[in-house]
Image (cartoon, each protein chain N blue to C red):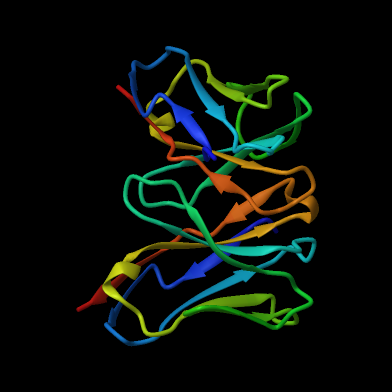
Length: 112
Length: 112
């Protein structure tokens, strides 16, 4: 049983560019949450997707957007990248209305 | 009101000792309180979790103590081992897990 997978593992972008990160949830899970983890900090909640809709959002600007597909996989898109967007981006999956989340290994984004 | 405050930032414990990490929350709407362990380069992994109607939960060497009136909870790691050296995060989730807020983390080092 594969756990949560994310791609790519590492990414280097330039300021102003756009990036798309991908996540496949754990088998049987239908809910995906995205987090940003800056170096030495705790994960910060970006948003949660369920039934292909953004259900809840944290304090992140509209430059951060997402999508969920019918197979429950999800994408995180970040436009107009800033240096401060450099972080580890984590995807977590869960079953609807259950709090237990399982995290993927993350995508390390570096913005130069 | 959405914050989760975690202390200490770092902790050094002798092998066989007890590691104690504390967290405090403000929003009484939170109803699920997990602890995660994270190793460098990996995503957080769920260790143990508790709900506010329970004052203590034990799983192996890990125990959560919960004080609902004080809005505080703590993680105790008994018989700490060098392999426990990692960063630990407390978190708090809203009902259904729609939104999870993490503490800033505690870096634990267990000396052999």
